[in-house]
Image (cartoon, rainbow, N blue to C red; front, side):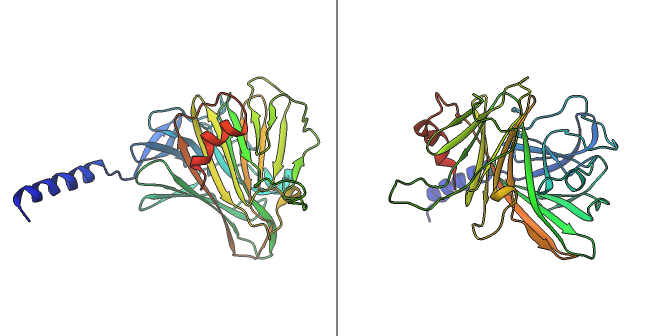
Length: 323
């Protein structure tokens, strides 16, 4: 190899090494909580606090907007006897039940750093006997995140429940989800997926918009009429478009399993403050000592403004980013 070619190769390798990123996890104080952890690779960052939870309280581009809602007046606090909205991303057990779904998560949790991953584990809930854990894995480059939710039955008797991952989005954005592939009559005669309503669901509410392929729900600050719908899609995904950027999470559902809430793998809810993008795992009978996992894949995308709610416009913004 000539000296010139060797020098050129050295420059290329040097540029690659300089451009490569790595995940940095550092302990910081944030929003009044003294024991928080920032996970960052220079492009994206997440914040998890060990003072309550487990919850992911921030996800966004480094230095950019927080896609997650933060409840005013509760940041930095802990020890409340009742469950607090708080904000961020959490793991629950479903189907929803006042006794088993709402144990407070207001106390300190254990945080472990395992290489480039952060694992946040809550003490066993006395109300359920379940240990909740969230593992966060940020890619070394880009902004992709793998979020692994683990629910362990720490009791002796088996328990039957479904994992339920809920992300509370910042106000004034647009939530979007997609239906399974559409077809034509009479080419496709069997039903393909349920659309699940709650007693308070009102399809005449103008915040709902439906196209052939998509369902959208707008978060409207101050609107106290709460709305919720669910559906099933083997390739479950939910997006949130906020100020020209987009949060996207994806989950693989199993059509051969039973899902909660009349078969929901995806649910969305809004009130006057936030919009939730939720994925549900299958209802599972979990023996004592056993663990089930529920995995979501997150990503962020710039230049995601839409001109109208239509199949073509949503295809343009969302389809390039779906797995």
